[in-house]
Length: 522
Image (tube, rainbow, N blue to C red; front, top):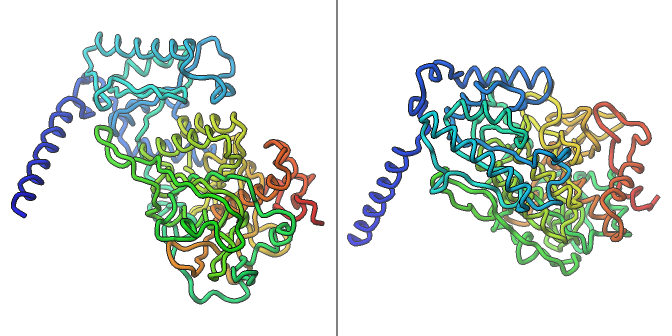
C-alpha cells in the first residue's frame, strides 16, 4: 500500500510539473504578448454573448465570420486561443462541393494550408507575439477535412487572414455561449425533454403500445406513421444506419449480445467513440459507452430488436447499426464536442456500408468545422437526418437549430397526434423543416417507447430527437425494399408520399412521414 501511494504521488508531481511547464509556455492569458492597445480592445464575454443572442433573435443564426476581427480575437483570448481555419485553393470557385470528393492531401489543397501557416508564423515572429502550441506542434492540419488549427493571441493574424483568398473561414474553437441567456437567465438547455435521463418505466399505460410477436412492444405512434403496416414488406434488412450521439449503454444487452435475437435477422452493431475528454494539452478518447442516456434511447428507436423479453421494438428492427459517441450530451457547444462530431461524420462518411446518418443533436448556431464534416459525409452519398431542435423553455421564439439548418441535412421535428399540425410542447419548427413525425399524445403528452439504459422494460423519449431517429428508421425500411436506389430517390419517395405533399408548410415542411405509403402498402 505504501509503495503504491509513493508511485501515485510521484506521478501526480510529474503531471503537475508538466502542466506548469506547459502553462508557462502556452497559457492564453490576455496579458501575455499583447500590447496595451490590444488589451483595451478585448470585448468581455458577457458582451460577446449579448451580440450572439441579438443575432440569434434577429436572424436565427450567428456566424463568426460576419463579426469583427476584434470580437473573434476577444473570444479567442477568453477561451483556449485555438483558431479553426478553413482553407481551399484560391482559384477554386465552389470548394464546399468538393469536400469529401477531392483529397485535401493533394498538392493544391496542401499548398493553401501551408501558405496560411507561413503567414501566421511570419506575423507572429514580426510582431513579437507568443508562438503558442497545440501539444508539441505549432499547428494541426486535419487529414480529411480542409481546416487547420493553431493557437494564436495576435489580432494582426486575424486581420491578415481576412485578406487571404485561401481562407474560407476562421473562428474560435472553444468559446462557449452562455445558454441561460436564451430565456432570461433560466435553464435553457434543449435536451430532448428530460435530457440525459433514460430510466425504465414499469407502469406504461396499455394504450401506449401494442404487443407483437414474439412478445415485443410496438410504440403507440407506429401505426399512425405507417410503420407497423410497412413491416409486411420491409424490416430494414441489409441497411446500415450510423448514429452520432452520446453512445450506447454497455448495460443494455439488447444493444449488445442480444442485438440479433428474437425475430431480428442476423445483423451487427458496432460501437465507436470519437469524443475526447481533457484539455488541448492532454486529451483522450472517452470510448463508445453512453454516460447520458440519449444515445441509447435513439439507438432503441432506430433498431431495437424484435425480441421476446417485452422490450420496445425499433422502427427498422433488422437494420445494422453503427453507434458513434461524438458528444457528451445533445448540445455540440464545446471544442471537444465539435471535434468529436466532426470525426464521427468522417468515420461514417468513409464507410461504404453506411447509407443513413441520424443526428438528434445540434447547437443554436452554426459551426464551420462540423459543417465541413457534414458536407464530407453528404458528398459521399449519405442521407443525413438532423433534429430541428428540442427545448425546455424557449420554443416560443427560436427556430431550427444547426446542423438541421444546412441544405445537406434533412430536418425533422415532432408534432402531436390528432387533426391539424401542432408541434410537440418542446419541439422547434420553421421554414427549414423537411418532415414531421407524430410523437406526442394528445391530452396525456405521452411519448414514444424506446430502450432504457438497462433492463428490458421500455423507457420513453420525446422531442425532435425521437422524431429524427424515427425518420431514420423509416428511411431504412424504404431503402431496404429498394436497395438499388440512391439517396435522392429515397428522399424523393419519402417526400411525395408525405402528408402535405405537393404543398409545403412554412413550419412543417412536407408534413408527416408515412412509411406504409412510401413502401406502397396503400
